[in-house]
Image 1 (spheres, rainbow, N blue to C red):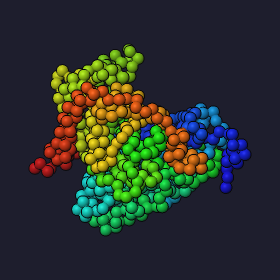
Image 2 (image 1 turned 135 degrees about the vertical axis):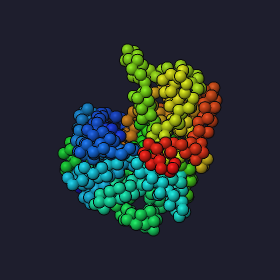
Image 3 (image 1 turned 180 degrees about the vertical axis):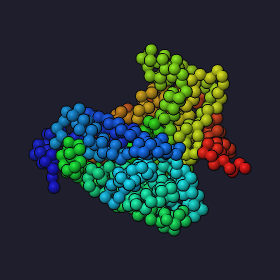
Image 4 (image 1 turned 120 degrees about the horizontal axis):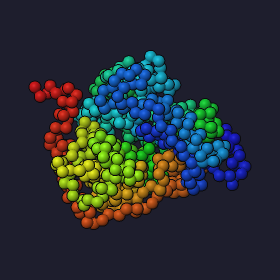
Length: 569
């Protein structure tokens, strides 16, 4: 059935058409209005989640949460549709009846338990005060012991799928979090008919139709070659876990497919025409690749914000490369017909913020304000004035654990070389460098596995720091290109919405028409690159010593902190 908007535009081909991408981040959701013909960004709006990240206590009861928990309230996601989407359309100044499609992307793995009709369990009065009934955000890392068991058993049984994930399943993903749910709150586990990614859940809310996207199913839900972990394997983990696959199993939709039409209720939330195309949900990092025209093999995209996710496609057909420490390799996980590789760093911008908020004195904050700078800008300016290695420091960027290539969220950050003369900007620079070194570890792991990175494309908020971008170029010894859009995930989602609405035949063709890229914005300086090689060698030594079993002191410290230190007796 055609919508009124489709009929109007069919009768007048000269009328511009628009699509909307909604990007759900860690703290807020952004809606972006994009013109279909050329990708022009016409208006956007942001809505911050009222409950932000629930890390210390449940708002409903004040009950304290254990360490490493990170929850969210799903109604904050609906509120983005109610507020950000109408405001973006208003700012864009376009007629709502000329919007032909909408889609969403999300952080992942962000997952929640629901009833069969999609009702989140945390919205049932009986479960409002139960932490496990809420959304578990991507950075909910308290399922690490469960992930360790998932991995150990997979290797013990020589499960074929474990190699597709670099040998380790992350505590962030569906199976580890699901096992934690079963063993810590079995009532919630058994009440949950669905264990669903937030990107699929909000798409369900918009369309009234349940779908599961190929991206999260492969990268976060261990779907490989059409199969998930066997019942025998799940039973060996925990006999009551055997029904877990039934909670996540559903026909898989390709990226760019139409999930359904906008329901009457969702149309009222957004102010958009009922029935317009809603594309299949996606992940913020993976959806960014089309936004920067990275739809061919070898072009790595790094979405750099509170954390960094790295995605790159490799040649399709045949078997994929097994690359140690990857978050996963999925057929069509980024672009149809290509193997999509994902890696990541759990903390990047979060680490910089942690340092300036907790360890920089008031005098520096006052100095920054006096000069009209942010504290980050002041520390960057001071750090840039120092030569490479001038601080005498090397840091490990593990304040949020290590996603790739060690896949261990019970590691923690370390700074080496501190003296009484060390200044705040020197520590700050060492943390910037540590994140660049962590990215180099990932790029070199891909190369060792046979996946060459031919271009490094940065997107996200951290690209505004020119010193950091130049540092990455020097450390990686390759040019760094930049996303042409400051809202690349939302643009990428809008590109998928255009495909779902039938404006383009496939994602690559839409990407070349609507995407935006600044090629070679930063190029490596040979002298700085050589100096960074020396620091990277020290980083690599420390990385392997503390991360690969040379010394497990970081694990032991965590056990002491948690009160589980009786191993020492």
